[in-house]
Image (cartoon, rainbow, N blue to C red; front, side):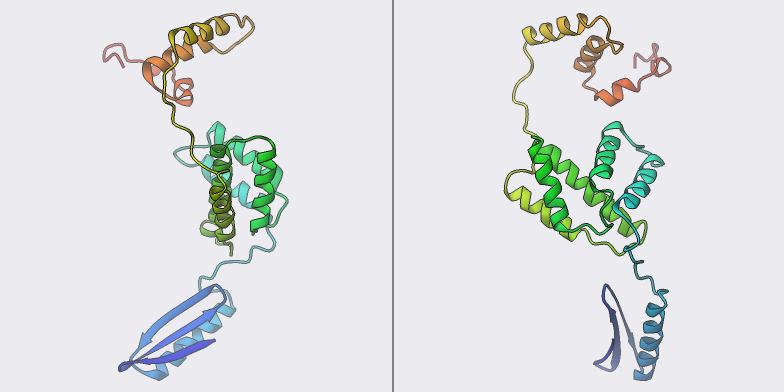
Length: 224
């Protein structure tokens, strides 16, 4: 319904329809009334930029679109992200696109029964929120991530969601030697874990970065 208000010597027209609101100010009241009627008509015809209905979508549809977007981004779709997305698709994909707070609560409780730690649960819920916001911003669906954030805050207050604990020590030489013995004893292993461990200690690089290195990346002249 449109509202026309006089603000000083000008007239402000406001059109509000559920999740959509537009406001514009005019010098003449007649112009404000005309604009309000036209805007109401555009909203009814879904041509005023309001979000599309999400009722015909499942959460799996949003996940698939999010997956495709990540795969074509500069960052790509890493192994960890892909594993999380696949698990969310299995456990939440059948639900409506607009997830509710109780959906996240049930999901989080199931994850806690599986003995996941606070950082893992935080990552899962943050991905759920990111996927929902993708549906809203990229697919232009009428979705709200507020119920999901409320559920995350509930588990945050209970201590079930949080950051990783900071490490306060380095591995001892004895512990490193035990790891080396273990890796060297794995005769059927195809991954050179011992080499990777020593390289990680020397370079401080992440596992994903190390495993993506190719011989063509090595520059003997620059020693890089």
